[in-house]
Amino acid sequence: MYKLPVVIQGGMGAGVSAWRLAQTVSRQGQLGVVSGTALDEILVRRLQDGDPGGHIRRGLAAFPFPAMAERIACEYYISGGKAASASYRTTLAHTHDEPRTLTELCIVSNFVEVFLAREGHANPVGINYLEKIQIPHLPSIYGAMLAGVGYILMGAGIPLHIPGVLDALAGHQPADYALHVTGSREGDLGAGTPTMHFDPRDYMERDLPPLGRPAFLAIVSSHTLAATMLRKANGTVDGLVIETRTAGGHNAPPRGRLQLDGQGEPVYGERDAVDLGKIRELGVPFWLAGGYGSAAKIREALAQGATGVQVGTAFAFSRESSLRDDLKQALVDRARRGEAEVFTDPLASPAGFPFKVARLDGTASEQAVFAARPRVCDLGFLREMYWGDDGRIAYRCPAEPLTTYLAKGGRAEDAAGRKCLCNALMANIGHQQVRCGRHVEPPLVTAGNDLAGVARFLPPGASSYGVADVLAALLPVVAEQSETPAGP
Image 1 (cartoon, rainbow, N blue to C red):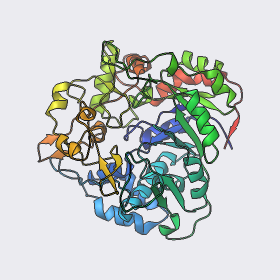
Image 2 (image 1 turned 30 degrees about the vertical axis):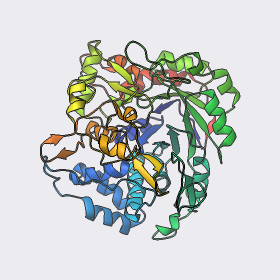
Image 3 (image 1 turned 180 degrees about the vertical axis):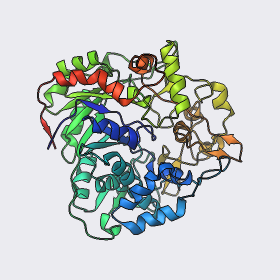
């Protein structure tokens, strides 16, 4: 048993909230969270870069099924790293008919990330997933649980079936996850909802005792969704993160018809406000997210009945985050000069959700940089599943080449302005793909509206700050609080 955290460090993907950041936060008694987005691809790129420091290989050595870990190391590790002008070898895109090799990679990569985040201390660590990226959920979660993850957080959808998945996987039992496939189905698949099926015993090289069942926190944007989660989930929902539209990454769209303001950003109204009174009535711990990275906002959240807050942007620009140092420094400098800008782009994300973009020269936030990039979709994490003409599941992405997208039944208006977040987010953490030896994928940084204020964490005369500086500004508030309820 352990006390619930007052501060949850946001699970920022892909790879920004990596194991170093989560470990540092958790060591100081708050909840460090790694991003579970695209960990399979991130792990193989780390190995192809030569695994500086040997951390990934140390995690692989600790994996309980050594033959599986050895296969992955042998396939992807490059001693000394690939040449800077060489392309990364990518993983296969996830599909309903997932090959065993990719399932194994999901198990192992999630284990390694959580293992490294938990290394050297006894405090809990969490992992954050996007419900939208459904296909890899089951083996990914199992890998994290093998490493002893303490919390699973999930948003970007309504993850009603994750609590039951956690119950099953804790006993190494088979689990299923229903997939969302658009359109109507005809053809030879018959009736029924398509699902992903995963049986841990198909992958275990030896028997293991039951695993600890992590606490499950659903990330929602309204009291209506919060109530739905608690009423309809197939197992225990241990808490809620209530995320407002000022948070970084994907935001919930406004309710009703989309309207844009004079700057081209979505207009939110009274219907989008969260009724915290109704949240309190649900009777579960909750944390507020989006603009709560200050002592004053933590006090406000606690006064409103919250257990604490989730803070992302402040940690994203700390030294311990895995955001590229040049991008980090440039945006901290802009914040210090009062020039930081964050734009809520209604079109950028292939997922269809508004997406927060930090404006920065040389990134895909600039129209010229975006326009110069060839439309390539070779990672496919945000692809849409749809029913093909033959009655089978097919895949399309509005950021892929337009002619390809249209040939799959996509609409031109749905492709306008879409950006390849998969490749851009890899570039954000220093794993940018190189094509034909010369074209380098540009980054596209996401941040919450709090970016404008991150300079307040800078020590006098310093140009950067660390996790310790962020928590020093917040922890006095934590110390003021009375004993919190025990967590699972």
